Image (cartoon, rainbow, N blue to C red; front, side, top):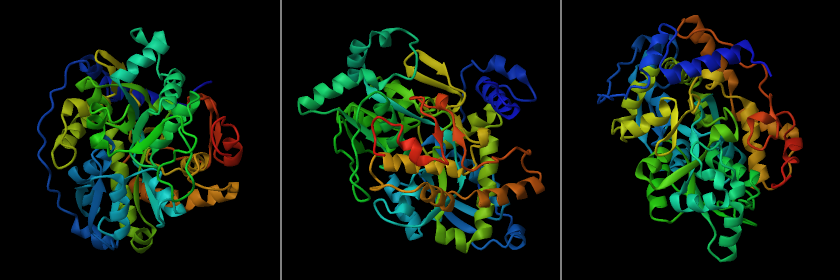
Length: 473
């Protein structure tokens, strides 16, 4: 299948980012292999452009945003540190939150004006899973960026079941089929395998379930809107653990594995306690990961402010994907204790286009983190439909819904109309290069992009659900 010119340009850009090449100088790729020496980053103090407040009729110029300690919070950090928010007349403070539950609760309560959110959180809140609040997202923050890691003990057992996993450079992703007999034995002995993810409506939960089910392992079903556990008929048990606690929980043998964003998979490799078995790029290539979420009440009451926020975040995404040097500076920002405060070498492992599966097994993954390419910032309603199908597949949505319900729900939460307004202003102001935005908000995705080769047409969600051997229809 041939690449379209746009996809080809995106692919070249990704390879250039990985290698360190830019449009100005491909020679940078020659030095990409050299170790990066990260510098200590001093927080900026950007001054808001006061004239923009009046000119753009900004309703609320002083804002507080929440983040979780994960590398994909970086567009918010970059937009503040480089003054993109300030140029829009916004004075933004960033507050680290302890877990994903608090992110939504504090946004709904109004102590946060918006936040770094799991792509499924505005959806889950709006449909009433574990509580109801109408939420929207004007912008997707990134594509890909997650991985799943198993303990070194479980990895050794998987290698015994599948000897090819002992071979250096074995293929990825690792199939969960090698886990199935282990899971059955553990469950029969009353000590089921235990995996952690970050939240019931997280991409991590759905990706982990997708991987397990593709290998014949049943991750269990939820019993409707008020069930936070989802263990009915389960071969393994899944539970919630905040991202920064994943490595410690694995080290203590409380869990056998987890699915999380970075830097917590690479930290497990560095500490010698875990082995990543897949990145989410292999579950669904260029899957939606995080979004910038806010209440519908805030969006409706502050439309000009929301457009200004969206403009700044689009610029941040573009800057992040523009060069390797920008990624290095972004890592230095994240390493500051005001944000993630982690070792920059660990933070940079995936942010700079590589991923280490075991010590010494570092592979090129130029699209592990995508912040702008492939229309990464566009809030595609078709992505929201996919999340809704997974909520139905695993029982968080308790009954059948019509295709039109999926479409109507997706399009009232994911708001490309706000994005397009912000993008048009950026073009008028010549702040980012012109690009081609999606022409179909409910597209089809080919089977080759998924680990189980099952194609997804977001116009036909119910037909899609019927294709899964494990899952509610």
